[in-house]
Image (cartoon, rainbow, N blue to C red):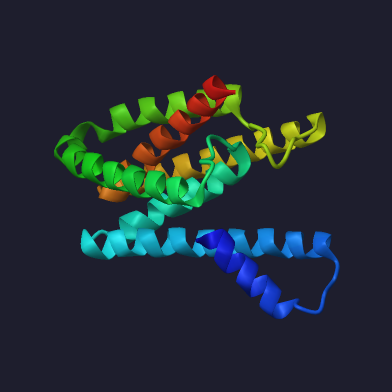
Length: 189
């Protein structure tokens, strides 16, 4: 669906262009924009339906920022990507709600998750994708960015723990999700 719509959009705006390579680049760009828009809409709908919009935004920001540097598993179709995102988000929200009753021990178990996630990032990130192979210099740069982004989110997590909010749990569960993506991708390749 996203591919077909991208083709129609590009063909509409570039119907006179005979450069097929240029059209392919635009089609890919439009696909990424549409896929991202669909993901954002899905997250917002789930947030509204579960009355957890802010938690969904925190999840999406954590996932998008850290995964942009670490890489990880990528579904081979947009439908699978959207399905995995939706199931993953709902699981993170359900688990976060269940863990609310253990809020008094959040600093301990959350710290353990954070340290394990940081170790996974240091060992496994960044990961190449089929569309983008990283050279040694890029790998060093993205590993550094991955670690910095993780440390920034750990600092945000700590502030949210002090504020005693579910959002700290959402960040920890997002870390678990990203770690699984990194480990799964590594095993699959």
